[in-house]
Each structure stands twice: as structure tokens, then as C-alpha cells.
Length: 177
Image (cartoon, rainbow, N blue to C red):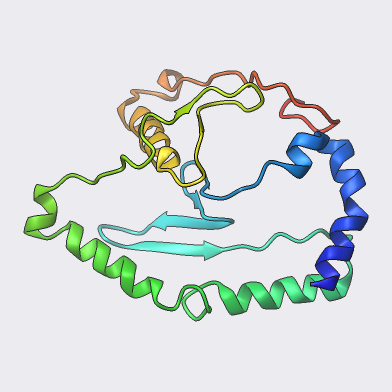
């Protein structure tokens, strides 16, 4: 913990300079994904056929971080994530059961329910897109499938809407070139 705290304290002034105080100190990733295949941290979900998905797990490290800290992060990631990891050992069985249940006769009769937090998201003065007023919500999943539907129904790439980024960001790092 000491390694993490020292590194955090040492790098925070640069992070704040580049991202601004709000993004450096208040924005945290929780229930997130990167459309269309990046999920839960830096994992890539690659469809490999009906009822089959391959997952790749990545770890990002600051090349300037102390070697001891990089080693701890690598070891922690390997020990905690993946099929043999502390956090995911039982997840394989859970996902298999979810897949089997959703393709069963009873499962096909009931649509998936993604209503948690429905009606509790909207525009935010500091962030782009729809922002949930609660930490626990399925807003992310609903928006993911809405965007996926736009891709699947498009005749060509030109038919897929791309909204310009309108968020106001302080700091020197922005979403624009």
C-alpha cells in the first residue's frame, strides 16, 4: 500500500495539471466499458461463435513508475484476474450458467431486464453523454446496447451518427488534437 500511496502522491500534481482537478480527483471508473468489446477494466471480449467468447486481460503500467510498483501491479493482476484469479475463479461457472439459462426454453420467453436506475440519468454540466445519478445503475448497459443497435441497423459507416465532443475539460490533456 505504501508503494501505491507514494506513487500517487508523487504523480498527482502532474495528473492534475494535465486533467484538471475534477477529472484527476473525482472521476473514477466503476461500471464501464469501451464500445464495442472492451469491458470491466482493460478486458477485451471477442465473440468466437454462438455461445462462445474469448477474453483477453490487459494491465497498463506507467513506464516511469518504480520497478517495485510495476512488479506488484503485474503480480496482483495475475493473482486476481482471469480464470485462475482470486476474483474470477467462480465467475466462469456463473457465466456458463447465465448463458445456458438465457438460451433455455424458459429463458427465451422472458426478455432481459436492464431497468436498474432507469429514469435516473441525464445530462451533466461537466461530463459528456448521459450520466447516472447513482453509482449502481444499468445505464451503461442500456447505452451500450442502444449504440450496438445503431451499428447493426446501419447500411454503411456513414449512417452511424458521431456526435462531436462538447464537454468542457480543464487541464492540458483534452479529447481533441
